[in-house]
Length: 104
Length: 394
Image (cartoon, rainbow over all chains, first blue to last red; front, side, top):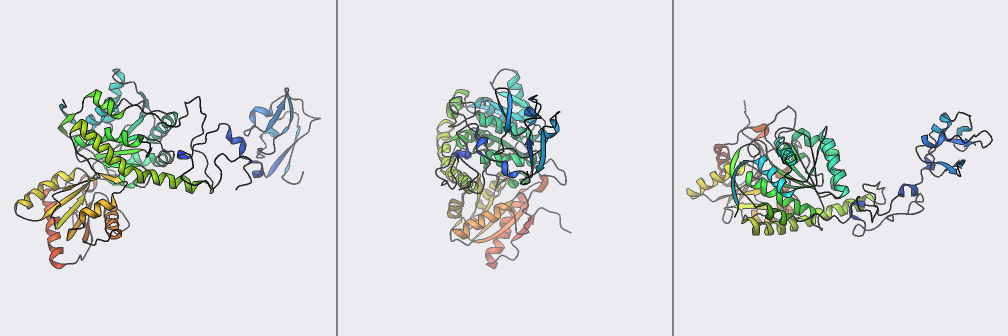
């Protein structure tokens, strides 16, 4: 079984007689279970000291990986962040460093 | 009482669609299928149906819209021909793999190039392995009847697959024939209400459709799809029986015509069958033991039944209205000979590619095939099994 799935919606190697019709997944919001963080080649590093919580990064993130709590940014969801760097470009305060994965 | 009317094949299919009253029709015009959405959109404009008609910008979009509607839980229909079907290609596979029942009337036309608007079977034969059930009609009546039966076949719990209702461009689609329509209320009762087991507009069960299937899932998904295709054979026969009760008309996987004691047989599909039956009748009057098989269901391929029907013949000519370009005959030939071989029968078999791009198929052409078959019987061997019928030779 793939280690990428913390929660297999249709378990791997389910017999064909038992799988859902047409592969339908009977659970919504399941993209969350597919961890795409290990696709990353470059990694954004957030600096809380420079961050003004302007939220410019939040809407541009294609993977919903900017974590917000009580109207403040609190970090990056590295399980899903693909390292595209759009947040780095969008930040007016240069609050993100952008480094090769594994060299932070 | 059934209603006698004179209609073109396309109009007959549009009338069937009005009687079926699908939830969604998304279509893009292409000759010779254009009249279907044209007539049908008039029914929509006149309020004769409740259908949401989606005039899309391409056939790829038409099939995509049908898939969207199907996943939402709608009974869905569309129509196309030739290059329109080719543009749907990618989405045909997705409709089948999502196990979405829908009905696509394919008005058979030669696939470009060279560009040609006339009839052959190269379009739907190219889509033969897309996972769709394929029914082929010989005439306007069958195009109408198959359109109605297709709904029940597609939506059957053991099937849940899309169906192509194929019939010949212009010859069937545009020629006007006297046909028998079934009363609106009987068609309505026959197709019943579509009750999908899962659908996206179901607020009680949220689902995701068309998901990524990695190597741990894909194979089982396809195997399940194949099982639905296998199941469909029995369902097609069942639905035909129910259809006979409301129409009096009999349908099977194929029609065996004067095959009981036949020594020489032809296997073919579509409108040329009428011409071929005329020849069979004439030869039978002369005492020749000839017959023919009209294949109605090409997907699933009725291999065992076809082999049984051909087991007694000395020789068989299989006629393909499209080339296969494997340089070894057309698809109907390959599959029929495969069916014969696997089931242990080995009549002398020969292939004819015929009628490409609307080339006329005359009684003299069919007579030539039966006469060639006589030569094969005499020689007791087939010299050149991959032949062309009606092409101009130097």
